Every structure is written in C-alpha cells, then in structure tokens.
Image (cartoon, rainbow, N blue to C red; front, top):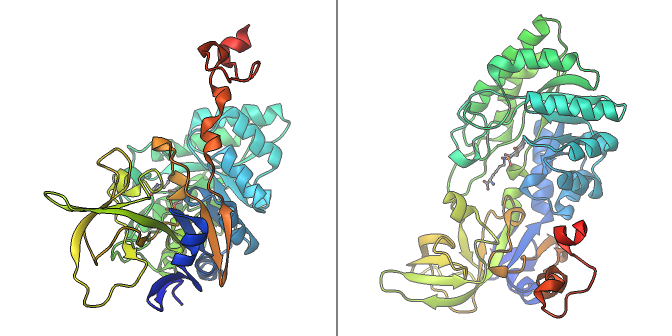
Length: 437
Ligand SMILES: Cc1ncc(COP(=O)(O)O)c(C=O)c1O
Ligand SMILES: N[C@@H](CCCC[NH3+])C(=O)O
C-alpha cells in the first residue's frame, strides 16, 4: 500500500484527503504517515534480524517525539548528537541503555549528562575529546563506555556537504592514529573502550563505499586485537539513501550482505544508525499556491512554504518531487514553472523549470520526501512561524507539533529597559550588563 497516493482524484495521506487536513491544520504543514514509518522500521529490522545488532535511529533526520516514539515502541535505540537530542530520545521512550552519543564536538556538560543518564556508548572522535571525557567520567566516579570513530578515508560518492568519511572531513580519527588512540583509551581510568564506529556520509546510493569502509574497519579490528586490545562493538553508522529522483538506492538486504561479508565474522555486536532511510519517504510538506505569476523569462508558482521550512533545495540543490493535491487530468497541458516561496532570497526556490499541470491560486501541492532533514532543519528566517507537524494514522491524525503563535516572536522582555520601549518587564532578561551589576 502506498501511503501517499491519489484516491478519488485527490492525494491522500493513508485514508485522509490532504484538502481536509489542510482545512483543519492550515498550510504549510508537514504530514507524516505512521504506517510508512512503521513499515520502514520493520523492513530494516527484519533485514538485520540475523545479526547481533541494535538499530539506533539517527534522531537528526527527524526528532519529532511522535516519530521517535513510533520507533521506540518497536524496539529501536537512538543515535543522538546533542543533549537536546538525548533528552528527546529519553522523552519519547528510548531506554538509556539503547542510546549512542555521536558527534565531533560534545561539551563537558553534555558528557556529564550522558554519563549520569547511563547511556549505552559515547562515540569519541578525537584525542582531546577522549581526554576530556576521561576527566569528566573520573570526576563523576564513573567509566565512560566508548567507541572510537575512525575516518576511513573513503569517498561515499554523495553530495560533498554530506560526505563524512574522507580524510579532509572533520569527522573521526584518521587511520594512522587509531591504534595509538585506542591504546591510550584503554589505559585511561575513566574510559572503557569497547570498539570502533564510523559513518561515511548520507544519501549513499552505492554499496561499494560501504564495502571499502567496512573492510578497513575489519582490518583495524584485526590489528587492534593483534596487539591484545579488546574490540567487541562496531557501530557502522547510517547513510543509506532514498529515491528522490529515480535514484536506485541499495536494497537493505544487499547492504546487510555487505555487512556480513566484511565484518560478519568478527563476532562483535553491531550498531546501525539509519536516519533518512527510516523517515524520508514517510513525510510530505503540504503547501498552498498563493499566486501564479507569469514572468518575462519564466513563470512562477509562489507557494506559502519557503526555504525556512525545507532548506534542502536551497542548500544542496536537492530535488524534491512536487505533486498537485488535486489529481491532474491525464490530458492536462503541462507547463514549466519555478516553484518558489515568499522569502526575500532568489534561492528560496523548491524547483526550477519543473513541468507541472495547470495550477491556480489556492491549489494545494505536496512536496515529497520531506520526512528527513526537513522540519528539523527549519528556521525562523523572515520571522516566519514554524510549520506544524501532523502524524496520520489510518483515518485519524494528531497534531504532533503545533504551529506556534506570534506571541513567541513578540516577547517584549527581550527589549532591555534602557532601550525605553516602555513595556519591558523590570528586573527580567537584563543580559550581561544587568548580571554584572
Ligand atoms: C554519526 C551519524 N550516524 C547516522 C547518521 C544518519 O545518516 P542517514 O540519515 O544518512 O542515515 C548521521 C548523519 O549523516 C551521522 O552523522
Ligand atoms: N542534512 C543533510 C543530511 C545530513 C546528514 C547528517 N550527517 C540532508 O538533508 O541531506
């Protein structure tokens, strides 16, 4: 069953017509399908079932609590990269023992919180980070369970901005330094080093970079074991791509075959950190056409969603399919349009010269594959309010993040008294100067 499909001439989310949702929620809004989330998780879970492994959903792809809870209910762990994400994972019901803390720049406060929470593992990406973590853990009288993230220097063959496994990327410990770092880690009183981690990039559509990277991990594991060090965990990261525009990402079963062939015989516990693959296809951004504006050189469809809601096209030139919510007649003439938002930048464009059936002011459109790296990357640029998020479940839906109101933009206590706006609340939000007095 396709969860976003035309029925009775209109695009539906599961059993609900999008026009009804738009009337109830207002546009723009993100619409997620529970069935799509659940079936993606179940497919991944079935594919890795024979491996001693844990699926740690990468929250950065979509940290809506309802989305996380959908996976948590099915047994998922979480991969988090900040105290905020760690708190979200816990709030959504992920047990601490299933949480991995990744990221290249954790603060001492974040380390302390993670250690006090008792999470499964902290992935360490540099010697300075290792030494700080040791200090923080000893200060708490604890040992931090650690995997060292390596940088395998492998080209993931993805967009340069989301490639993370090349030597020139900031991530991980370079190959030549891994053994010394592991040795050092194993001698630190506050550290219990258990294994290696890697993540070579996002939106991979080719298995060969995985094969190359996992082979390197297997080699390093053998080297470390050869000098008497214990390696009993491997965290293989995420990165499996989805089809935005006819790409043919690998089937999960084929990815798992590569895992088995490369690291399967090492007898380690494995962790997988899928993000986009679990959520990307499970969400759309629904928006209303404000105006159709003929131009001298091209015609524009101006919609009420903008780059602050979904920045991927502006940031990565990413392609997202755009569908009219009312099904176009098969003989409807197709014209090319730039689909743009209201923001004051020419980069606020969802599609350039995209063939579309006739659209009119007030029509609804759905921007597809907006479940991953979409709502989470939203901003308040141009003082726009965040688009709400809803979760459809068969014939019902829940607003799982409401649209804020303008009061949040108009917090008068941001204006210091001395600026004399007249309604600043005395004694509040005085800032550094007030604090020093
Ligand atoms: C350490 C780590 N794990 C997992 C992921 C999830 O990646 P993806 O959403 O491509 O599966 C990322 C993001 O790229 C990451 O940085
Ligand atoms: N934000 C990126 C993915 C980043 C992955 C994070 N390591 C995207 O939209 O494709």
